[in-house]
Image (tube, rainbow, N blue to C red; front, side, top):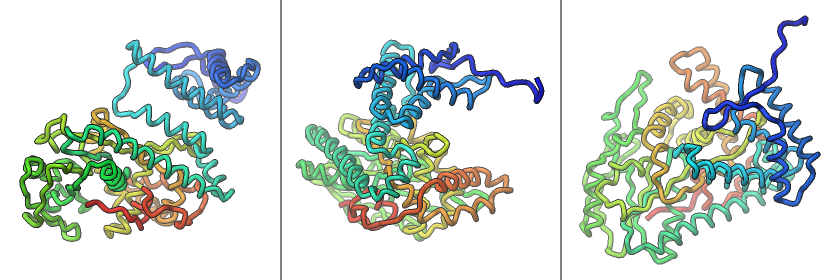
Length: 451
């Protein structure tokens, strides 16, 4: 055959347990039919037609000897169902997919990665599908149709309801609780979540007192410094863990402590600056990156602690059918926040991000399985707001770093978020964002305060 050797079509698939099995279009059709039947659809011919569309995508994206993963095939089933107007079937398929995963877990045929909050991911994807905002393309359409205020309202209701439910459950066991921890990676929304949770707990009769662990940082000059003059202050050891434990223990015992004060503009800590105490009927609340890191609060008994974990569990696909990375959303948030409130150049934030990722992969994310509640801090409509502040700066950073091998990580991140944001429609109407919204934590104007 002229034009070179013909590429072979995919013939095998890799299952979640690593086993290689034959690619079977009929199994795809059967899965679609089961999902459709559960919502009243019984057309096998349509299931076969849709399965062929899935197969076409697989053949276009994979060539033997490459083998797609079974979850990659399932992702494309969802894509085909949604794009062909079968959102109810797509929802049923996602639910069935989650059911099958859980059944395999029960039977010991699948090992679940504790670092991945599967349940919250599926809940987020279902919510997005129900509100037609599971892709950047659909988000752009919502903006173009003038329907973003409706999406904002629906999201805020859902987020606030979730926080209220957590507060209600915690308040039911208030006699045993001495410390509530809100933990999560950088820019996941801990401050807003902590403030709202504290307010709801107070409404439920559980009085809370905030302890700001930012004041327990060691002096900036005590942290390792790299060749670019950047400091690694993202590790748990950047905080005075021993003093934190001493103060937690003393506060819970009814004693008065003298808190340190940290001046971020100078990178200096000043000891014994502020007296603090809690009453017997009060509960301490802390929000910190490393709240799940056991040494951070080891002076408090485990059965006296409640752990809440927050992450930006975004379920939004770009124009290439790839999910937007959670860490990219948090990077954009931190770029905006640090530029506005801490005087950092956005270039510094991107260049520093490898320290953030290294620490959270080691000290934060692996422990999310050891938590009582998970909060999704992603916001389905935030990308246009992030684009407003960051997009114009990114080409300069990309050009600056493209030939610098020492800045390879920063270049890759800058280019990736630039390409992603280029798909997002320009839009910025701050008036539709409530003053207590989680988004306000990053774009400014939040009325929420911790006491």
